[in-house]
Length: 212
Image 1 (cartoon, rainbow, N blue to C red):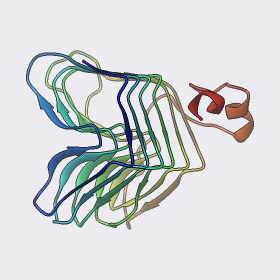
Image 2: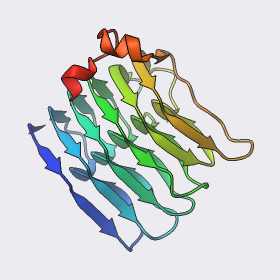
Image 3: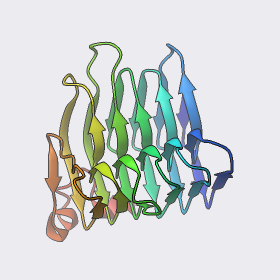
């Protein structure tokens, strides 16, 4: 369990091929459940200068075990990934097994260095599954994200592979998404485009007053 971790101005970079890189954790695997609660990354920069990197994130890069993310946040952070990279997200780049993400937010997240990136989401890049246990992502929001890539980009989630996952109350506002020619914009169930008024009134997952 990782609780109450605040990473400010963290700068993590590699010139080698990255297979799991994040502001708080790179890669987690195994059968034991991992939990992140009230963890925050502010003004982080995660960069991989080689091509074909995989699973990069403001907070957790690659999670290959049952996981829980609750009340976590990434603000004003950047992932810089070169050509043909994949699985990139604000809270997590790659989630497998049973994942539960709730009450999290991402604000001011950027990943716009490469037009060939795939599976890029403001909150989570890619959700897959090994068992039929459902992943759930609920009561989260993404605001002011700037994302560019080739295909499978989403305001909240880049791509979800499994039909067993469930989504609810996922809000986004003022995000910029640039897709390559013929690319796919992914929109999952529960993906709600908010307004400034809805955020101010607290209708979104967390009010922005709580986020600031």
